[in-house]
Length: 213
Length: 105
Image (cartoon, rainbow over all chains, first blue to last red; front, side, top):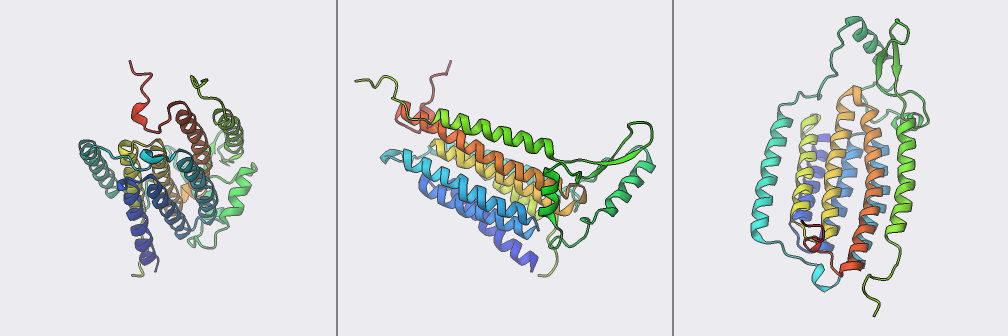
């Protein structure tokens, strides 16, 4: 069932992404982008990342896409709705894109099934400690559907150490510590404040330069 | 039809979205089309992050946390980019990125 769902959703998402690229009409491109983003959130749900999928729907589909549509509406006047690209540019871009895709797919094919392992520690006792810590977490179960990811991610943003375990030696003895995500959370919030002020400053209505007459 | 999908199909979907975004950025002449390409690239990267979070226990939390950051920062990036596009449109009465050549040497 999972593979069937995956191939259906992935096919729809990939086709919508390709349609976003090949269409000349900017309004249609925005609509295809809507379907691509929704398909991506379905992929997230399929992967068991319900919080990320919900955030994708809320922020991307509900927020960013509305911004893009507003931009299209504010600037779509006659000739700008459909701007043709020369076929020479198309040929070059498609060639580069295909080469890039082949390189990426070959790289993915050479990957082991579960992805890259963490780098082996020089000390085997350290590796054992980390392995034991990995097993003690209640998250490390095989059933992604029942893991309480949302709660754990929220705790991580509040400063509770929930990250992957690693070894530190503050005073000689090895100690298993975990990362928390409070600092990235703070950085993102300050960043959003800066974006708010910057976007309001840049987009405020002002008279066009040289249009005094 | 019941076997589990591995990591690689997800990474291939992410690669497809990434390449679509790059080609979209390169070919679209409309500034908002370029912005749409950036969104596609970020989505491809997000699929990679969440797929690794699912299939590699080391990234179980980190992959999701990073993808959440990417989503939120992409929203901010879209807001600033659209403000710049609107400003450009107000000054030049066009959204064709090929006409933005004042800084050309």
